[in-house]
Length: 362
Ligand SMILES: Nc1nc2c(ncn2[C@@H]2O[C@H](COP(=O)(O)OP(=O)(O)OP(=O)(O)O)[C@@H](O)[C@H]2O)c(=O)[nH]1
Ligand SMILES: [Mg+2]
Image 1 (spheres, protein in one colour):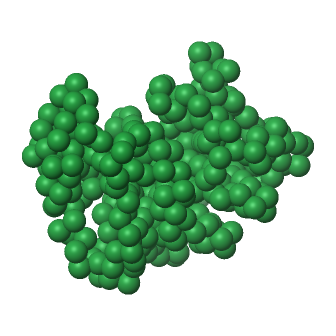
Image 2 (cartoon, rainbow, N blue to C red):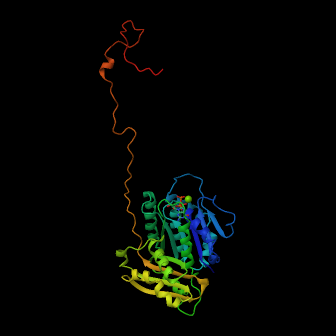
């Protein structure tokens, strides 16, 4: 009985594809759901189960969440997900749903997907890739709507990543998503007779209400590792917490360290992170400490759970229409002198005195 990840839309699909390359996730069952089928690579078939939710009618397009949601429900009513749901029932929880928040398909379909899975009594953790604060309004409107709807569904624990503005190379972000999966599925916790994190500890951490972040780093020395893990927490792809909002939160943390002198270096490696957590409430800290030469590499991971949601970008719901083609201008009247000569203007007219002014486009 392994974990299941389900990627929805383009971003969700890409993250699952990258996860399928991780050897430590080889026991994880992987699904993707998207409205396009053309990105299926034959090498992935078998490892990943692709479920297309394509509709013929072109009702709406481009980042339309309603359409993503309707397409999902239509295919659900036709039994497209029955096999997946059956597998979810028997899988190890939590079930992870990965999507971007800014698009149409993933952001829209994630809500009915989570609704169904939760109605089956399963724990669902959405991993949501959000737009950057400087990205266009439409991205943020979809993001805010997704958060509201997931709140309505009753999602309690979730994780958020943030793309960099204008980046079309998503791999660095997607790679961090895969690392988060490896951490929360317990793949970073080797067996040890010192402090260890087992499945039930992880279960507690992953039931902590609120947002969690999970990062990992590797370095040749404890000093460099301290800097790397601190940098990942405070300036990585998972938004850092707001100091004010966090005072109201109670955190649950899980740290792991694997290095030749892990027990001696533990406090040093996490010193900077802990310093910045010190004015927040912390309920418990789980530890996995492994003294192992590890081929000369020191590896650390951190989960911080119970964090507040990143601040939403407030978007005006007014839509400002551009100036219409005729707005603010009137039809011109010709100056009178152009008509002064009188007559019909027809040179064949016996009274013709030189002609009325006429444009001639011939
Ligand atoms: N990190 C990351 N972001 C992505 C990826 N693909 C798209 N995005 C971002 O996600 C948002 C768009 O979401 P998509 O996942 O492409 O949309 P979708 O769910 O396929 O929905 P449609 O709009 O119907 O195509 C934009 O902010 C993109 O910058 C990806 O592979 N990784
Ligand atoms: Mg798409």
